[in-house]
Length: 202
Length: 202
DNA sequence: CGTCTATTTGAATGTACTCAAAAGCGGTGG
DNA sequence: CCACCGCTTTTGAGTACATTCAAATAGACG
Image 1: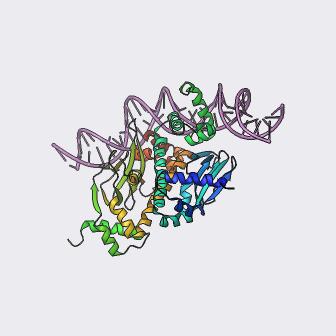
Image 2 (image 1 turned 90 degrees about the vertical axis):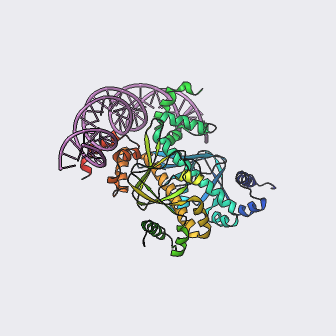
Image 3 (image 1 turned 60 degrees about the vertical axis):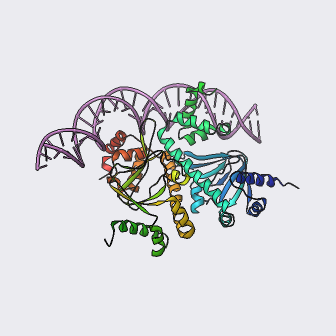
């Protein structure tokens, strides 16, 4: 085959990187040998609690979420993402410690993965690269901080409206019980909110 | 004066750094010229919304908190710390953007401050230093992630018990309305929890 | 189609909030 | 050193937001 299907995913990643820094084709080629492609079926897990999040994960196609399962077997979704997003348990990745989160596909999903070790080697060879990922990690921190503030200062319906705005293109792809677990309410309550304010959404 | 009072604070910082990396007296001297000491009176602000968090702040003595003031004029405490802790609005610091948080002294407080610019220069000269602060920032991220999970999966009383455990030595120094705003409940409700479970605490 | 999972409904309950007022406590000035 | 003032904490009643549980309905997929 001339263009292996993986090449499409690699190209997607290259574009993503180039959207923020300038990384030549040659330098990207050097990276390519370290990359791996992973595909997940719907509901399949990439990482389960106890495993270490060893890679940065770039979503080429599909949809992923990260969630915590508490003692009462309730799910709490920390993060969702679709094609073009980076989704990982950064806590586990950065510290190289076992995750206590599940990373799960919500659809059939294709990932491009960069192992931590290779990533850190590349930081030396390609300084722009270090900058790029530092930005990603900072972004993760800031998103978390905003969310913490948000969760404390707004009620469930306001958080839901914010969610719909932030994820307007992809809400339909996310099951409602996942949205509920992201907002921190029960599926039943989210359902009742939607009913009560039905006129608000078309 | 032989030992300027500032020297005490500098020594404190040097000890803190040395607890994780090995930084020679000479290298620390190089850092010292960039440091500044700041003292705050009780209730005074170090940073207010709109200002940029330009420094990493190490608490030599006293107690600091970072909080968000929402549209209903409710306070939400993001972080508290005492001597030996680092307290900053990392979001603003990392991105060099205006903070939307208040950083306030809860007691008369003395800080040692490292400006971002100098810090970044030192990253090149002293690689261990880069490592030290990377760790600090990662720690901030992880603490936030744990807190997010916590806030979603535990009720107010459980969160309060966790708070008491985590801050057992310093709880007495923190006004109860600040504790309440950290836990995400009203002062009245925290008070009623304390009454209801009075036998739990001595 | 039939089965499995997700969503909706409704009633009863619980957790946390609002508002108002009283009590406690700490610092300051006389 | 005590009295007063302002801020923090407590108390209680009434209310609102969100949960639990159980059952019915709707959707997805083989």
